[in-house]
Length: 325
Image: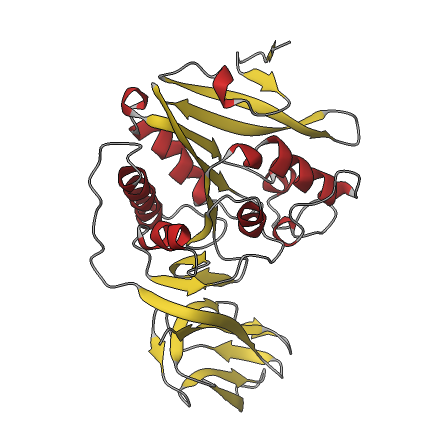
């Protein structure tokens, strides 16, 4: 039985793309769980089903509740496309982590990072069950996945991609995004992207800027990359827009941390290239005295960095990408 909300949006318990009429865009509330009062927790789902059958592109955002840029990317895509010209289907999930979005928190309500425990467990704890149902009620219907993220609190990111560049399809998905940086990242890591890959669904993670804000330029870039993929796959008749600047390819990346606390200054910006031995941060005590300088351990590119001056021992300095050979 199909239930209808007071806003005439259907309530569903599992995604069935074929329930959406061909040539139409439909909105759904998909029940994932119930809260401590037994009130249903619903995830918003948008389905655009073309007139002709074809592949299914899935777009997900806000796996972390404070990562907002992906939401308008998905919203605007569905406003812009002509579904009558679409071959195949597009499914958008603008918010995966609904409880945390409402609390304006990154992690799930039990303190867990949802993007570290995928695919969850059917009979696990609070976060594990939530993750399992997301995967098995929504993600399993996709043929491709673009998962939209941003930096976390106290950090900024470049516009960059995480992808398994050893997979030909995934590599193409990544390069079509016209990102500033692409990082080769094997997928079996507990992420939504990694879980999709293990299910045979080519997937990339698209890092669209900074947390807790909407950034118009990066939102526009995210839309362009998705349109590029739709055009390349023949799902829509649109030209592939070439990148203005060459994308920097990295074979790996890692964060550099402090070993003492204080007031930190980082003289670098995201996408800056650094050489081994370059000063990447200075640390001063509360009296303004220089305590320590930190140096780049090897050549690389700044993918992201901390923007919080107050930095305790073990705090993040910057995310260093190691250039591909």
